[in-house]
Every structure is written in C-alpha cells, then in structure tokens.
Image (cartoon, rainbow, N blue to C red):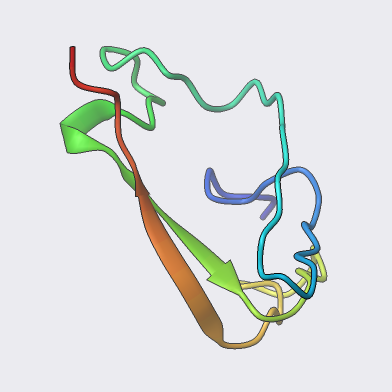
Length: 78
C-alpha cells in the first residue's frame, strides 16, 4: 500500500570504489526531533542498504535482495 518512510524516492547506484553520494528532498520525513515523522526522534534512525534496486512494487523490500550495509542517522551533538 505505497511506500514506507524508509523508502527513498529513487534507487542509488554505488561505484566500484564502494562510495557514493545522494541528496533527496522528501515531504514525509522531518529532521525536527519533536515532529511525529522525525528521523532524529528517540536517538536516531537506522538505514539499510540492499544489494539490488527496489522494484517499487514488491513488499516489504521491493525484491531488492540481501541486506549488504547499514548505518545510523543521528543528530550531531552540540
């Protein structure tokens, strides 16, 4: 039934050097820790990287294959 908050608006391709960079603007997430849709509330949010592109149809992972990397998104400490 549509995307979940973990879905980015497009797939990302990472090069042979295993690095990449992407910028997205979405209206369904917030960086305000007090917002109900904040990715910084409760200490942060995890991010999961899958080995294949999301087909944007199959749930829950878009038939994107194995999980190959993960990380944590947190607010910088003052």
